Image (cartoon, rainbow, N blue to C red; front, side, top):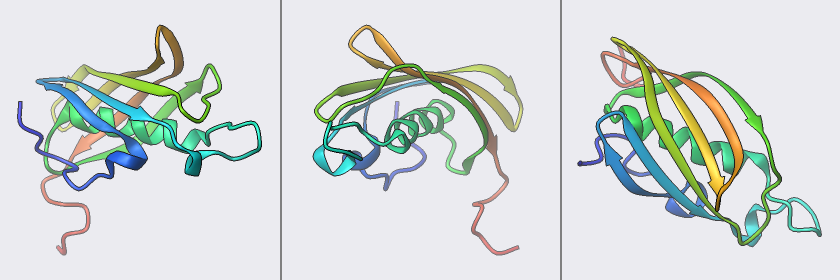
Amino acid sequence: MEQRTHKLTSERLVGKPVRIEPGYAEVELITTEEMKVDEFGLVHGGFTFGLADYAAMLAVNEPTVVLGKAEVRFTKPVRVGDKLLAKAKVSEDLGRKKIVDVKVYRGDEVVLEGTFHCYVLEKHVLESP
């Protein structure tokens, strides 16, 4: 399926789409040195969240989709060099509002899980009235 939204997203910072289907997407991210926050190589949670958010947007895959709210749980720490895979599925389609369930995996381990409330706007959020 063709990617219809968030086409200029940085693969280096929030991942590369590996699968897009109606109501479903998978995005992969390999964490890098620039993402670490300390000498242990802990990756800032914002990058893991960004990966999950991007996967949610691609699961909806509408040009004007935006995130309204997210409820997430970080379940495991992420380290530099980890290969992450986000799997996002639209669980409720309420017209312009879509509820998307996302899990981010490192191998078989879930490192983040959450519910993303996405909205498909009539026009781009930054477009003038």
